[in-house]
Length: 458
Ligand SMILES: *Cc1c(COP(=O)(O)O)cnc(C)c1O
Image: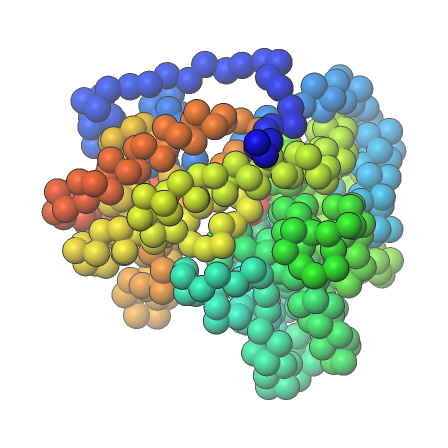
């Protein structure tokens, strides 16, 4: 018998979670105005809202917390983090920030000006937000394969080199401060970018003298996919692949709440000393002094340790396989899921799950509510609510794909939890024709409406 994958860790501390009744959930979700962000966490049994900052730290990370140096300047925790970043990524300069968007704010303040264009692969929403806030524009150059959930392409996060070239030709180089490659590409479903593509993007950008930065929240998961799926990388270690990936970048932003398995933190790292000095000014202005930037010493210690643990093969193997186990079982039951499975989440195509619900009735949100009512599992809508209104016409923007995302926290849930989620979704799928109507908006904010929107049943 072939030995199955098993977690490369065991449990030392536990946290109680509680099941509820359907009657309780009916009342809670009504009071939450059918917005799962408004639920209290104790009203949720299995929480798949996000993998951001929701991971379980290890015993080694907790011991590092006790060793944190809380000195304002020059703390040993700062040097520990500097050494870890140098060893893992190869970048000589870095600035700590409170989380990923802090890193974006610091870097973009130094790099992006009004009227600029920033090409990339489906920029993450905070990245896009920080670009647009500066009256610049993010241009999506993701390959077309990413938008067809049935195409089984191994690197759906890749940048289409023709699309990128046409952007680089269309605009004067002074207007293009940077190309941003998001690894893995969150917005297209946690899909990886191949090393071949990374290399080609760097080569193309270099022809125009434009730097390449990685939005690196899930860089280790990306490296795992390269090892498994890309020709020539089987025998390379995750750390070797990571170093090769970053060797084609001029710098990176990092949300440490993802692959560095801490609850809070981030950083920006780069090769250029000039850029480091420019960005330092904004770090002091927005985040904190350059040797802590919004993080406690103990947080920097846990982050340093997390960078090492997050790039270990056995850990990544169990993480990616857990996500794939969920995806494969859903697929086997006929549930439409994005393929191949991404690194951190399974994406269900809600408009194929509930084809009789019109898009005006928020299909993925309707499915998220049904799953919660069935089981107490909280997923998140990545569809029309998130896509928001067109800023000019104020009409709803309807994205190509209407997703319910099931995001798996790191080292938190067991295979039994996955089986529970699978059974819950199969039950909803079997009675999908009984879901007759969707939802309507009763109140919404002017921007980022999905966090606070209030809905009602139709
Ligand atoms: C989470 C994330 C960010 C933003 O990071 P925060 O820590 O949430 O501020 C940026 N880019 C990507 C790809 C992310 O996944």
